[in-house]
Image (cartoon, rainbow, N blue to C red; front, side, top):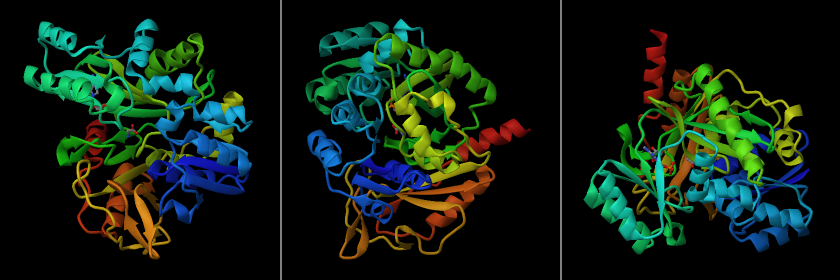
Length: 433
Ligand code: AMP
Ligand code: GLY
């Protein structure tokens, strides 16, 4: 099969590396891709959000299957448009992608079908939001832009002044564009967070190994929210008993709800969960693989990813094996200093050869998030630059390997967190005593 992956970050790189293990994958392309992905796939410079150009290219090149990995093209209906030209694709159609693209849609869905989530209210004008927040008088309060905002449309406000500033940013200054026409105000929840990605064909759902993201830029969860600074899998807080509970109370009710609403979900559904004192609750849904969750989840997948993906499209997921190894994985993001605000690009990256460690280490893979090739050299080209992933028999060993590998890579103003997995290790220790 000739396959096209749409996107150009670490997640797409991990998907490509996993797809290449399938005997059915004979040719693989990526659009737009990046400097490191070019070592594993043929890259074509088309913007992921340019639906018309992407679909025309896919038809012209006669791809057998397209994997739409990024949220915005899914929300724009790329899967629907590919179907119109007869090309099957991995990912939800436009109607199902609303589960991520509209917080109002997903919150109303959860309320209607009794799926546990934070209490909320929806508003379309700034004055009534503030009236509501003042009348509640409960802080911190969570304010979310309705639409896609690169993971940055969530504000946790400690007092009235912060809430006012937040509402102004989202609704008046339109920091996230039309995404901020509506806002959701949410109750603040506490507890460990768990990411669970699941394959689904609309009827059957098969969860992947759980993971834990580290969203803040700095150690000890300080600094600004980012797209994710590192991940570990499995997530020790997600016990087998909790997994069973989430399946019954959250996962299956969600796919049934989507069927009921006439928009069955095909592809990878991402459950962002918080394990609160009152049970697991949904913080957010994503309509795609997580980044950098994918960089720890797929290296542990033992089954054939291409077969599974096609089964989500063909609605035959019940017949396909989805098996993960018993080991663990860790991914440390190497970012440009200053990310997620202002940072420099075009810094030469040392320590890599053909995109991978110049001094290879067993079980270590370097996934490229923001790199480019310039005059035969690999340079930085984004905020998140590389994801250094390691698999091992257990989490302490995986973390040790990932951090050791990071030591062999250098670029100017490189920034990484030094405590990825620290909380998970503490949880494991507590479970073992
Ligand atoms: P999101 O972009 O929706 O994943 O939100 C970013 C982060 O904000 C989440 O990972 C949580 O840590 C936090 N968050 C979102 N909603 C809530 C909530 N209702 N209560 C507490 N924290 C939240
Ligand atoms: N790592 C969080 C996300 O992909 O949304």
